Amino acid sequence: MKSLNVLDWIVVALLIVGGLNWGILGFFGVNVIGAIFGEMTMLTRIIYGLVGLSAIYGLFIPSKITSGEYMGSHSMKGSSI
Image 1 (cartoon, rainbow, N blue to C red):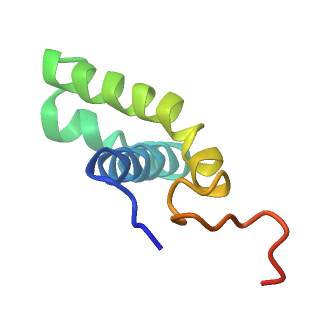
Image 2: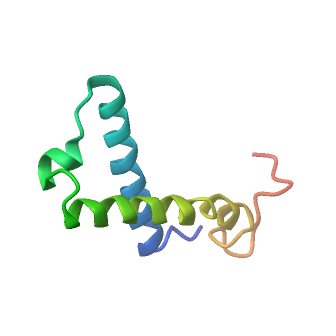
């Protein structure tokens, strides 16, 4: 089985960072990214933008996996696993 490419792993990492930031913000009222890089500084806005772009790209990762792109010539469709 072929693993995720570098871009896919970057997207996954950014989605985890964004999800954790939103979770901490929702439960504890602390914006971790804003606390580290400053509230709405250029760097913070770039990080937020990259997380947003990653979410759009991340919508297509499951379809790439189920289409067999990461499974070589095999596909998960019709699999008994």
